[in-house]
Amino acid sequence: MFELAMPWWEFALRGTICYVGLLLLLRFTGKRSFGELAPFDIVVLIIVGGLLRPAVTGNDHSLLGPFISIVAILALDKILGKLAATFPLVDRVLEGRSVVLAQHGQLRTDVLKRHSISLGALERELRSHELRDVAETDEVRLEANGRVTILKKA
Image 1 (cartoon, rainbow, N blue to C red):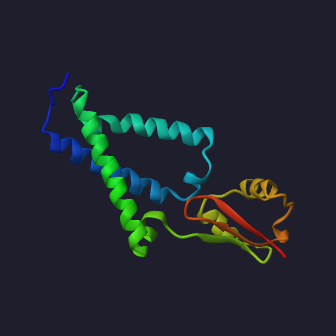
Image 2: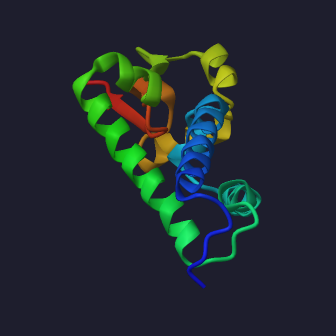
């Protein structure tokens, strides 16, 4: 039950590598992935989690092995959070930058396409802010965390 199939440090290393690898993959898939989770996104996350399990724990079936990996992942997450709060460059690399989707009522369709945001999704976002058209906005921005912020015209 508590006998490990490999050294404790290998669990920590496997967990760390999987965390960093998945973080990079998700970072490169785009901001929209984090902003609003559709059923498709939830299914993808569940499948990814299931597929990563053997990469983290190997052939280990003990109770202790997964907890060692979890501690390593949580510790790395905490360290990266502190580094991001201290160093703007680390924050920018981990979180990314916000991008302008529309400015002064003019839609930037090239930016929408680059970030895989459909016109329908943007229109839903406008309606959630009680706006009917992008012309009523001063600025629409896709934030680094995937949320859309809208500044209305004065």
